[in-house]
Image: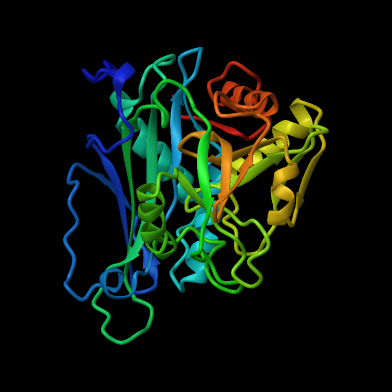
Length: 341
């Protein structure tokens, strides 16, 4: 199929409407068979559950053109599983996991001409989401839901390479100990908007959120998990019941251990030990790893030895290995790559 006439090399990280999106509706206790549609608009009642009580969850993943010309998606089964967990927590019906993966495949295949070519630095971002669609005026779960997937081509999250970020320790809390921090719900991201806007206004790239109970332990940022490297080259990530289980983070830990032979550790990470790490990164779907060069704790600067010019050496190896797997340059573990075409 002929590609769209898009300047792939200079594509930004934003929304571009594509040809098709997937839609399935839940009513009377069952999901319909689902369909692809050309209509990008959603019509809702003014009292829809999603509008009144924020009953919405979502996922994010990417489709790639590999070095040998295949179109693939990275570990969509894990997105399906995580969305099922999110649905259960917000009293929403689970969209069957096998159907989730099938719907992703259908959506990507229907928008094949929008999948950027190999080597362009661009990818096709895929956004599955679900929301309460029927009128709800009392505080209770909706009884009808819509599951949708759209796709949009995006450029690299960081143009010209990933320069190390400067982040601040936030005075705001991201998630309560027994709250919804471990699921991918829209409400978690809404509460982070004021914090990220104020961080940007003060000259910072992101926030470091601490645990709400003691404010002594590192949790995550508004949209990414932390990954640290010790001075003796051990990869460490924070462990907490209120951290979103990042698929990118889990994949990077596997790569660190099985591909690079590094020791990995998932444990509680205290703020007062951050100064002793050699490297720090933020990991997520959009950028894979964003290096952090400086962390500011209420005026006290913690400067990582990896510096403010480039990724640290271990972070760079992790990035290159995982993106190599995604792009087909390095053999993937079994089950990691879903081939669309």
